Image 1: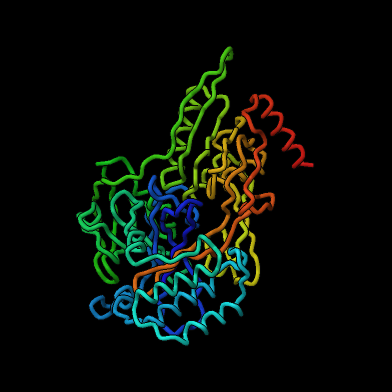
Image 2: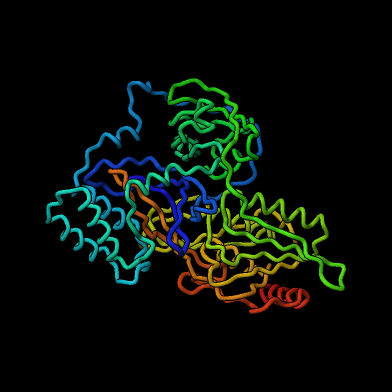
Amino acid sequence: MRLLPYAPSPRPPQRSLATRRTKPGPPCALPFPDALRAAAAATAAAMSISLSLLTGDAVGAERPRGPELCRDGAAAETKEEVRRSEVVTNEQLVEEAWEVVNEGFLPDAGSRPWSPEMWMKKKQDIVQTSIRSRSRAHDIIQKMLANLGDPYTRFLTPSEFSKMSKYDMTGIGLNLREIPDGNGSSKLMVLGLILDGPAHSAGVRQGDELLSVNGIDVMGKSAFDVSSMLQGPKDTFVTIKVKHGNCGPVEPLKVQRQLVARTPVFYRLEKRENEDSAIGYIHIKEFNAVAKKDLVSALKRLQNSGASYFVLDLRDNLGGLVQAGIETAKLFLNKGDTLKVTVHGYYIKMKVIYTAGRDRQVQNTIVAEREPLVTTPLMVLVNNRTASASEIVASALHDNCKAVLVGEKTFGKGLIQSVFELHDGSGIVVTVGKYVTPNHKDINGNGIEPDYRRIPDFNEATEYLSRCRSKELS
């Protein structure tokens, strides 16, 4: 069983993946591998949420690495090869899916009551019957998950899961995963390659370790962060350094970029009638791997063109990568401002969100480390299709008195999902947690009410934000 953090849009889910470290689960009937799947990001056709967060700007020279225990690659199978060689029975497959839900499911996510005792009874009912075909096992898993009453917890066929693992967010045709290096940090391994893609053609192979990008050491960085470093304009080149296998040579490779995520950021400068001031209008369609980078570029260009105020349009934005949403919000927050995330789940563990078990709720605070990119008044446009990562952005800016919300009540998607691969190549998506606003309001099922139904005058919006900050200080 391998874990992939994930959270879909409120619409029929469009998928992406991201890396995560996970806490070992209890003993199971099968020797589940503990290697984690790394991720790919959302583009226009893939809007979903992953939970690992950017650690900062990609700066710094390559650092010397400590000694590493090396095993003969010819004598040691990789965990992936071991997993593929395992023979799993239909009954074991169903039990494996049951175990994932038992360890990770958020109890109040479904519309029906759930408890470990009730779920154990479900297992006892299942294991008493013989399952004669793999398709029958899949049917049983689907019905078992449907009984939870959670529309986001569902079964993925092997072909559906395979499409996820092949999704590319780097622009050079590879997926990365973070794995612990044994020294308290992590290293990045190549999880999968697009055959005959740029990286594969340049000499990268599955199982290689990525050491640097354009001379910058990537040790300890998140897969999302490094994927952003690999991106660039089509047909330009990026130089990477990889180590082939466990004991293989280190090789620098020059890779020509071919695949790029489409920008979700569209902007324009609007002059106000009878006034010298101008408005910078920015529409973000989704939060994908290039959203933050393109937003920074848009903000700087609009500022240089004379924008005095900004409108951030999140209408019809169904979400995307959580880390992209959080990094977007931090562009506008004051240093020290917070985003709060409440998690109630077993499998989530990241740089700012940690859980120690399903029996207690854990709340952690994400803090803006830098001063805001812009300090001028901000309006955020929302509607009933503003969901998930978009709601994180809207609530963070609103609750920190950085923006007024204008439009309609948002969708109300505050649940977090993770994707688990089963031993036959199929998978299940399980709701494992949720997030709340900085003011401790539960978004899920409730949405966020706007401050104004219609666009107010910017002077009125500025006064509203001033009162908000005064109230916050008092």
